[in-house]
Every structure is written in C-alpha cells, then in structure tokens.
Length: 77
Image 1: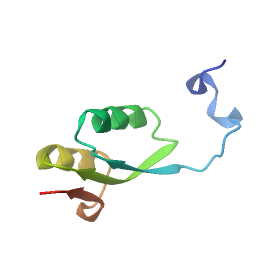
Image 2: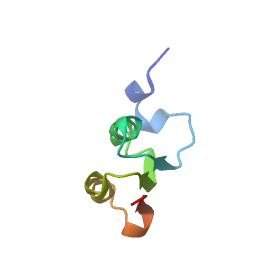
Image 3: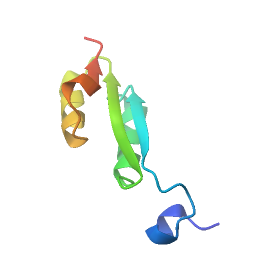
Image 4: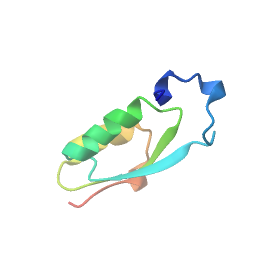
C-alpha cells in the first residue's frame, strides 16, 4: 500500500477539490490532534469552522492560524 503523502500531487487519483472541514471541540485533545493532522494537508483540506467549549484563548489562536473570522470560530462561553 502506498501512502497518500508519498504520491506526487499531480498524479493523485482522488478528487482534486479541497475538502471543507468543521472541527467541533477544536481545543480538546482530539480536536487539537485533528488540526495537527490537517496542518500537514493544507493543500487538500480547508478548515471552515471551529467550535470549542471553554478555552477561548486557544480557539482564538486556532482561528488566526486557519484565517477564520470570528463568526466561524465559536465558543460555548
């Protein structure tokens, strides 16, 4: 099995469109790990929405990192 990352971009047989992703719980353990993975595939995925519980400071950093407006990054508090 060939890892997707090792295949040159121009020969990828998958849909060439960028996939949009919303991350719920972005400041939690799974959410931060998800964003770490997506960071390595920025040419394939676009984070369009972030939602978090209590950690507004980290949510602000994440929204700046992914160039999201405040309307696309929401906190429960």
